[in-house]
Image 1: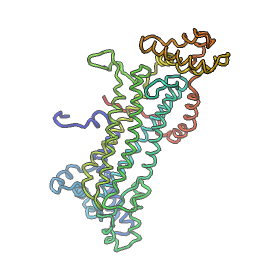
Image 2: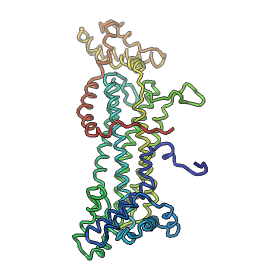
Image 3: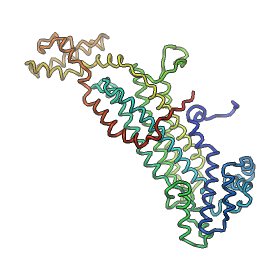
Image 4: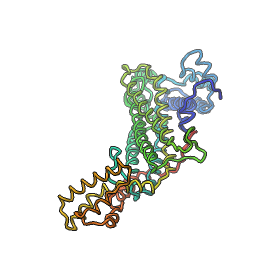
Length: 477
């Protein structure tokens, strides 16, 4: 490998080999040949004078692509599709006259794009389901571990570590639902000609409308699709690309939120992403353990969310039946969106699989704040013991402010329980107050919510997708 040319970080650092192959030239050109075979078979079955021998010749050379011939031809004609038609014809002299018969370049270009996006979405789904599965195991393991919850990143009521994880899972589940819908709605362009009117096929089939109506469904079935888009210009509507990349952007948004929470929790030393034995956190500060995987998730996620604007603008800017200002942008935005989301999901899977939880730190922080949150319960206990509610409310407000000053201004521990125990209006001793500081009393229905969510919502999803569970993340340096 030379070091004097730009190399995409998406291929060198982030995306898996499997996703890279889906968007490779080899995958594209092999799909072109499959499409040419499907077209020739369809035309033969509908009565055009194409022989079995010609079809067999095409099939014999479907995989051994003569790339050098195609490259040399493209230097002359400046047209990638016709260069590959020529190269295929060199290998298939008996069939060269019927390759690409009646079709326009978008027959192979656009149909291949749909096929590749469908296959890429399949891989994204596999990784997304595994992220959901691993997060579900994490949520179940820590469903009962109380932790301080935050609103506005200020201490709020307690929750559990597992309950917090269900918030991440639910967003990824929404993404899975969107992915399933969009992937299930993908159709092929079919073979509709230069402006989508199938004029060339009217000529080929002598105006036989019945046969022409059967072309697209037959091609779709041969290529593993249920249908083709009923109408088109020269291309399938670029709105399709918008829908697909919006799915990727949705996953990126969920991953970004997840990674931000992990970064904040790692700052609090409550949770930590995997840190390898020989990993260096900082060149200057050896003690640092930076959340570099989560930071990478956030960084790539921002890229994917912004990348989704490309197909939206391209779709809006298409003129009439087709303009070519989509091509260069599409070659970049669609593959890069998939390569980036692939890397993001591998990172998510890696982070979840190796998350380290520090219960003692979590407990310490929770207990330092819990007296403030327990004041309502304390006040009710004092009322039951004969105290006046209105007087107690005012007293507990005053004491809470005093304890707050003790923590913020003096840097001391929270002494609210001590202050309440010394106040005769409450009639409660410090031992009784501390006994009431059981965090499990303040997490509400969090453990039950986790159990119910995992059982009733997540388990059916994982059961439905059990054949794609159990993958390992591919992480680059």
